[in-house]
Length: 302
Image 1 (tube, rainbow, N blue to C red):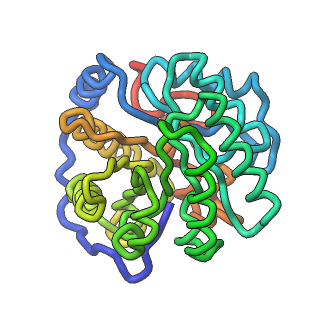
Image 2: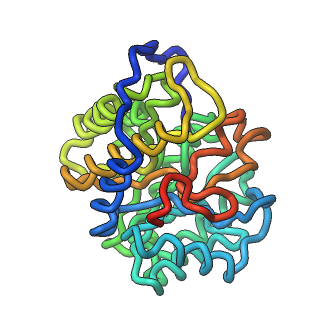
């Protein structure tokens, strides 16, 4: 989830939100009448964090909450129990965007890559993501990332497209990475560029179209977009329960109407994201559609 230094939109404006809860729920019912495209999956229970082992039972439990509403699921790692995710998803009839989490630990990177390749060869990976925002974080050099991408492309079945996940502007700024992708996996966050809610959906769409422009006909997937339900403001962007509900509805309605492949971020609130390496502050804990107690936050319909 990327904040862009020096790229903030001070679009405070008047908040035009005037939809009643009933109107919002009617829009949600329409989305639920056919499954939505995709959701970013977290199996971590309350009190857990990356590094903790995820059990098969908790993956099955949480996947069962999502399967009625989404066709695809996205995961972020292939180790410490996260390797269960694509297997469970496929068993439930869902498709998968499976990521190898790359960072500064060379041994961990090797295990993530080997597991991703093994899962793809087992037939449970529909799109393979080699890394997530490693260039944004500065964890790898571009040349190192490209080596991993080349290796995965050579060792997974040809019918499995491979790509890299990062903020939309990285695909504009790094043509070699763009060229190495079979599919471009772009994170689009108006909130983290300080864009006020009334303009956020339009700005997210512009981010997507900028990637389309450099993709040269390749498939483009919105791998993450979302809005926090609580936790404060970031320049002109304000977190709120109704604002997050509105952004979710607008984003998913646009994806359905325009046949855009979009993974909403995220499935469940994650308290661990407030501090530490994630460093997102109070808003970090409030990106989920469901809270940490697995209650859907925006409506009693679900």
